[in-house]
Image (cartoon, rainbow, N blue to C red; front, side, top):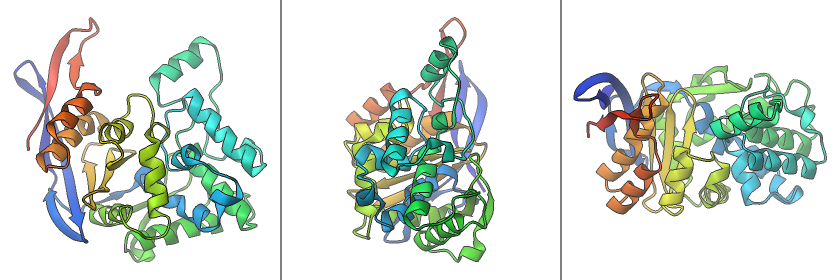
Length: 322
């Protein structure tokens, strides 16, 4: 059963409660947990660091001269900011195909600053603003490298998506027939499995297995391209100086790898609220000695951890129960 780990206060009264399931693994063993360490949920965008593997296995980085920022973007749920869009375009230019191949759907930018700018300047939203356009570029690149017909590449029975399922099953130590399949926000299949198995996969990002160091280095060295301005993933990776890799998934799934201590954490917020992650994650890392007090303060200083009204007055806050 999920456990209460974050309370939302307005003055001195608890107004809302957020419950979580959390598991941390090292050497495949559980080292701490809260709630159900085997809670099943959809991995959502936290699966992206592994969905880029077929592209890398096919020699995509060398074939298309993909640099660190571009690889990081392929693992991202980016904010749709100008630099993110520019980088997606760069990937497609190197692949010598049109961005019209993107079948992730049109989306407003996740970053509110870019959203407001585009509205003010009357600019249309495009699939390039979609937070999953980087992932889709890697799928398209994999298809191009292997001469796979890209028509309807998002379909669950398409060879590209069958390969995605195979890779996810391999890295999560799961039988692919036991992985739940549904459709993600960008149209491709999404994978349902225990958070324990998500953590097993993220632990491998700290290993010497093929492509693991390549992916983790790209993500932690270029964290802006993994998420963007004001985002928890980017802030954690920047403030820990590449030591802790972090990746958000929709409905408030969250996965991290401590690359130095070679352990991984997977989190699911029961109600899917992102604000609860901003409150919990820094305190969880500090509570388990994975960041120090200086890092904790630096991370929290960059997060919206105070509740303000329309007059910009502080009227509430969050408290973690660790």
